[in-house]
Image 1 (cartoon, rainbow, N blue to C red):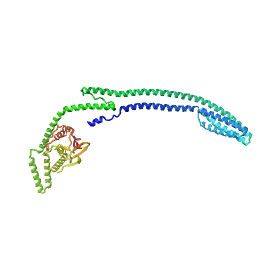
Image 2 (image 1 turned 180 degrees about the vertical axis):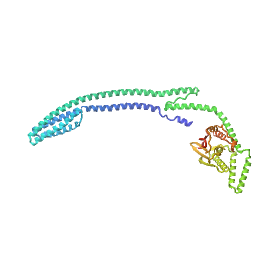
Image 3 (image 1 turned 90 degrees about the vertical axis):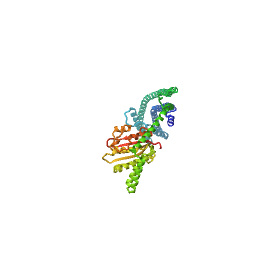
Image 4 (image 1 turned 30 degrees about the vertical axis):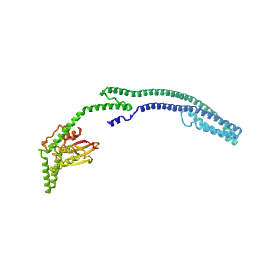
Length: 498
């Protein structure tokens, strides 16, 4: 009972504190997630907006640098100054770096094709200006004038194409800008709606949690009121959760059940004492019945022992060793059956009696019974009623293997299954029908003792004595798989000695 009570009052698995913390933590995480989501997406859209007009700015820089190249080229061809030449080469390098980023592949996009044309034409323009500069430096007037004129034509085409592409880009980027702005506004609206929904969820969760706390408390209070009026015939309060309220509910239910059991124990205490006395008397009656039936025809036991011992001494004097051993075993067998302290014996004593009994039978029947044992030596001190195993073995011999056409086998096993000591007696004989098994276990079957040389102690006597001794009904099991498949009898003893 104490162990069960400690189990009931074990700390709740899902405490109310944990539920509240989880609910508020969930709300906080949702709000934090929405803010992070808004922050990330807003920044991404702002970065996209920043890139919208970057292409227009780049094209403006290309156009400005193209003007710088043209001006520095004109100044150099006019003055041939080293400063203008340095400016020219610097502007050419910067222009080449800018046009390097322009698209140069194959595409069906009109704007990308225009970028490719500007890039290719820029390379041609730079090459023409370089020829003009080389002609000027070499003093070849005709050469640099022709190249300069060609470069001027290309310059005009480039300016027109850059301007056209810049206008097209501006129109496209304006549309993208409007789309991005609309997305940002939609994102802001979604954030507001999400916060509103999370707020509603938070209120709903608070209502749900408080209801889960108050509802079982109200039921528990109602049940406690009924019990306080002395009425214990109430239904157990249902346990709806495993929090502190669930623990209290379990404790209340257990308290009511303990009170019921206590009252019931008080009511049947006198009846149990009376039944206990009846069992003692009945146990004594069964034991005496078993002892008397073994003495057959009321033979004087002392006269029988003296006679058997005299026969054993005579056999020893005549060097009849086997006869001496046989007579001595028979004397031991009968001596065990009329011991005054036979009410309770050890398992080891019972096994030795079975060994003696099998020995006597094998002398009588020329060793026809094959006997084997498998014993857990640590269980030999287990207590049980006297004359328990030998009648079962005798039953296996008389009704199982006596009249079979194959070698008869009896196996005795003693083993442990958790806290239970199992004693198995198995034969390979004719087996038992299921209907007869049921009648034996229920005590309704009685064998015809006149058909065999049985000692008269039947299975019903053994079963009744075991039930009385241990105070349990499920003390024995008899197993038979069918005709000619043998029979196994198993006794289950609760080993309280550890």
